[in-house]
Length: 340
Length: 300
Ligand SMILES: [Zn+2]
Image (cartoon, rainbow over all chains, first blue to last red; front, top):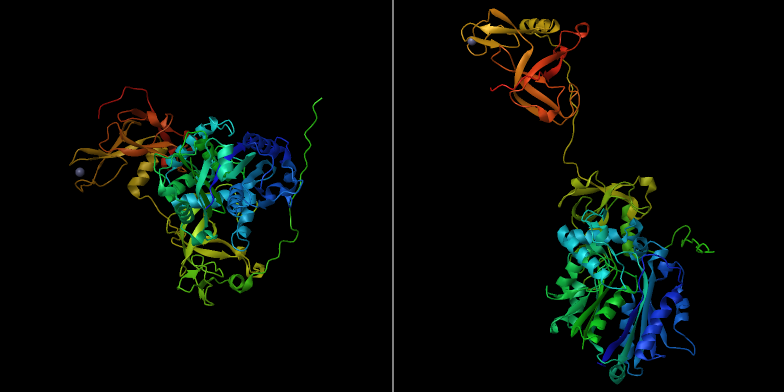
């Protein structure tokens, strides 16, 4: 396996409203920042993650290419998923050995529509989508299957929001009051990731190039993706078998974990993922505040990898986990292990 | 001069709906739904998938061609409560989403469960589909309008009519009440005064010969604060009290009034509040209620 590392990471100061920026305008500053930090102006491969349904326009990712300079022609790809999967594709591309660098970026403007309904469109079109089962509803079914005590959910929401207020890029949300209205019982508003606009970018580099760019690259020592049955009734919703499998395949348990950034769009998901990934109480989970403090859909998973890598590059952590999820109720899970 | 932000609205829509072919497995399920039946498909290892898929989700192997009737009843395994339904939801009033284990199935069906209140949900709740009218069914998951709880209780209205008369001693007591007097009887054997007036002593069985007129003042011996409405009571909460009329040996039950419920206490001195003489009938309703006199409490 070729040695590949995260060597640069940038994200927008996320907002809970539409700032009037077009997608290329949203992306351009983070692309500029990772170019400046990495010292690279061209990349062997470029891959992005976004969702056309957020803009309601087909091929909306194509116009976003304006922000990266696609001429002379570049080698480029896109995933209609969170950009963490674009990072996975870029990592695979770097394993081919003929290119040494990759630019990965993701973006989402939740403000343009209702994410709760957009996520209904990802459900199977025969049995679930026609019921109008929305994102908070199916998440609430999972929270109910888990049977997590409300006090535990509230504490996760409280801690995430407090950490988010200490993170200049996250939204600054008040402490939950404890009697927020239920969105769908048992989930209250504070248990649901807030609508967020934002973007993020990561530079991957292989071998010597990585060590030339970064003093302390975040080497990817394991990365794995697993999926479970799509239909909710065919799974044990209280557990995440695919996160556990991906965690094992990526080698999460092969050493102590200092920091884990988990793609938790709902409070109860942290409980399920900690269990699936075998993260003990000593592991700092989502010190950035996590998605409960900023959820720029389609960049949120990439930000988990970037935040985990940033702590290694800064010397604050020796071993970190970045996690991303897709599909209803943690159906798919991508786990990245990084080491100094 | 600041300009208004430029904003446009647009909708993404497939007019008339998006047409999908179903294939033989999902198509069979939807066809049976249209006929008001629920079926699952058997996997190679014998499990029954509901709703059916073309493959075993755990092994990826194709399922067998065997379709198995399931349900229609099932058990709610897990639910989430929707207080505010959204436009695309199956019901337009508060409802639950349920993971429902249909009888005979090895996987759970996701659907709406209609109950009036979240408190009606419990693990193991038995439910049945409520089908759309046959003419409206078209082979769609919403041919089941929702699931509803099985019948476990029923209410049967009951009413029988009677014509009752008070008997001679009660009639005499009520005539007294009409005239603003409490009539009691004294048992010569027991030396006890009973009110309302009666002609036989409940203790010793002797005939009571002596009629006594009691004043309309007395003392609260015990009371209850009632929080359920009663047509005879002025408002909720109201107090019903046992009142020992002065000179009586047994208390009489009556309403309390002209006093906040939480100020009523044992030993409180009270007096009957009568309706005006011209409104009186042969009825206890001649006494509106008992009200405090303001005298010091007495020790019982
Ligand atoms: Zn007697």
